[in-house]
Every structure is written in C-alpha cells, then in structure tokens.
Length: 305
Image 1 (cartoon, rainbow, N blue to C red):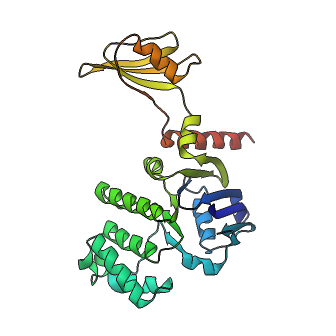
Image 2 (image 1 turned 180 degrees about the vertical axis):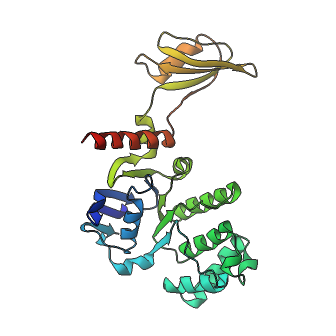
Image 3 (image 1 turned 60 degrees about the vertical axis):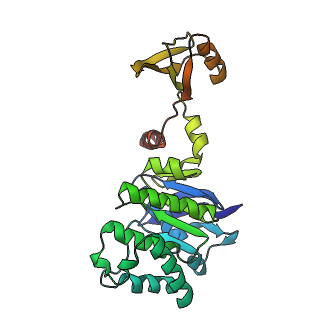
C-alpha cells in the first residue's frame, strides 16, 4: 500500500517550469530516494508535500486522501537549510517545536529525555543553539523532526555536517525508524547512501522524472556484463574479453566483460573447469554512475528538442 501518491503535479514560477507532470508513489514503510542535481525541482516538490506552497495542477494523496494543511502535523521535515533559533536554549527550542507538532508537554518531555539520552547529549539541554557545531545542531534538529512519530518523514541532505561515525549512526536510526513503520523520503546527492538506504527512487532533472524504480532493478538494467573473478590461476574464455588481470597475494583478480550471450552460471561452470575459483561476482554500475549518465542523457535530449 502507498502512503504518498503524487499525481501529475505541475508548478511554475514566473513562467519557468519547476515541475512538469511529476508523478510518483511512495510505499508505506520504505525509504524512498528523491534525487536530482541542484535546481532540478526536488525542493519544490518537497515544499508542495509540506503544504508550504501549492501545485498549479495535479494532486497529492496522503493515506489515500487529498493532502491538506492539517496533514502537516503528521509529517516530519528536516530541511537542508537548518532552521533552529540561535539565541534559544536547546531544550526550550526542542520543547517548543514538539508542542508545535501537537505533543503535550508531558509526552514531549518524556520523548526528549529518551532521545537526548540515546544520543548522549543531555548536557546540551541548557546550551544556546549558537554554541553548537553544525553537526551538533543537526542532531538536535533530527530529534525534533522525528519526535512526534509522524507517518511520513522527509530528510533533505540529512548527513550534511556529520563526520563518518555520526553519519553511520544516523543511517542506523533512519533504518530503525523504517523498521518501526515510518515512511521516509530521502533527498540527497550522496549516491552511496542511496544504495545503502533506499528501496525505490525517482530522479528529477529539469522539472521531469527521468528515472524511476527499484534501486536493485535499476542497477541490473544498466549492467555492462562486467564480472570480477578471483582464482588460483589465470582464466580466459572466448565468451569474454579481459579488461584487467592482476595477481594480489597469490590470487589472480580478473575483470572480464562478456561478449557472447551466456548465463553467469554457465560461464562460472566453464571457468571452474580451468582452475579453482575463489569468488565470482557481477560488477554492477553504481547509482552515482547511473545518476551522471541519466542526467547527461536527459540534458542531451532536451538540447536536441
């Protein structure tokens, strides 16, 4: 079942199209990647979902019903541009934002205590926001985004300002929220995180969806039939061409590109007749490679029109 449906949404500013017939569906309990270069239309769509602005045409459904401003209380939004008040104390601000989302003071206090202890930031409660580093402020805003347990969470570049240790911690929390039933829209330029977190994606470029679908299926569809074989001795075959071959710690690492139609299982069987095979895997293109290729192709098509 889908939590969010975006149907043929159009939005323009001063005659310039920001979104042109954009449609997507976000299944419940999943992490959905909303990708695209700067200025592609991602932020406009996020603002529409948050009822900050309205579409010129098209509709958005949340839980099967047309989205309305009262639904915003059931959405948690962590924007790329952080919005904490620098002069306020951390605890006061967290409490204020929680109550703004409809939480009682009692429930907010209990939830904040849990998250501040979990993130080991109890000592920050009486600090002013301006005393925090970018990463510290990011933790506080992450907590205030998820505190009221919304059905839909929207994270726009959530790892910005985090070191690798804290970024990894946040990834684990995002997956834990998904496992508890939250639906998450994840907007980022970090394609490695997309592969780690997202089941499905939409890639937006120049107001249009140019790629959409399941991450694993998209990567498989862009396969170049390149394989990495680690073996006890060199391997070769008429069915492939050797891209590279190196000996590392006594093991031959051979990158092969298939040039004949043959299943991976049949090819592996052929190689096993030559020598002992330690490992055999297909090298699928990364989401970063696919992102760059798709954006360039879509821009080339637009330039020809």
